Image (tube, rainbow, N blue to C red; front, side):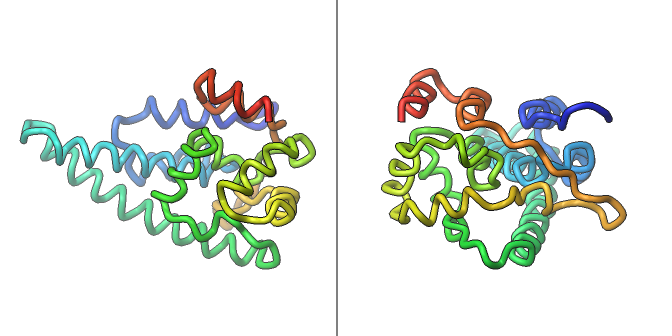
Length: 204
């Protein structure tokens, strides 16, 4: 594959088209194709698997339940193992940088995204330092610091670090790919946010 690094939108689009319920094999294939978006793909795949699992639990028993539930269970096991490896490797890569998102569980992460207001896709970009820190408005720093109860200086210092997502997942015989950071405005516009969410964030 040549040219500019593949966009996160393309990577998520490929994931959504491949299977209704992603499995470990699909995730492995996509993280090889889009190494710069490995962590976000993993997070999104888990969300799809959880949604499918909840749907199987809530709906009456039907012909698809027997096929979906085992796939979801296997996917969840593989995804959780991979996330553990991601977090462990990330702590080795940048032990000096305090990650203000590190103590959030999945529910808290989603709640924070909703409170900004945004979605987990946009918040993942910030967490993984895929947004050029020089383009993040000071108003957004203040807004996020209030929502997280974290000093503005801590957020600014964290966002100013090197992008980590591209370093987390790659085979031992492959070199990590350094992804191109987006501007804050581009990150807002390319994260599938509603018009009102975009308008609010871009005015900060």
